[in-house]
Image (cartoon, rainbow, N blue to C red):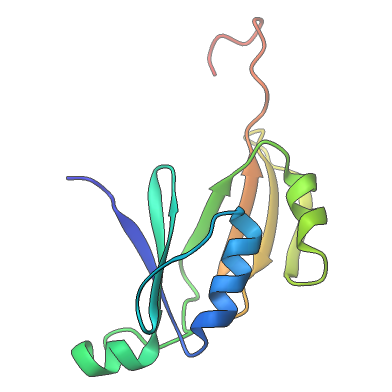
Length: 130
């Protein structure tokens, strides 16, 4: 089995495409009216119009209702990503070093989904466990 993607269901496809394109620096691939993918190394972020879910799977995935999953993106420098976002994101947690060593920035996308932008601590020769 291969993990392929996470799909966000939204009322405003263009707004989410703009947000995640700006965040990732990767252009969206538009596969159909109301459906696009942002193809990143390791997985794809799919964005779907709520009307498509209603057409094929009515009620299965209400738009902008996620409150339990966190979308996580590993980057080299958290602060550089934060500065590139400007005022487009709602910050939940400023860049913080977590107890396990990751530097993490939490924000919400335009639909309210929680997004974690993080970097792992740099490995040193004195730290063979990482």
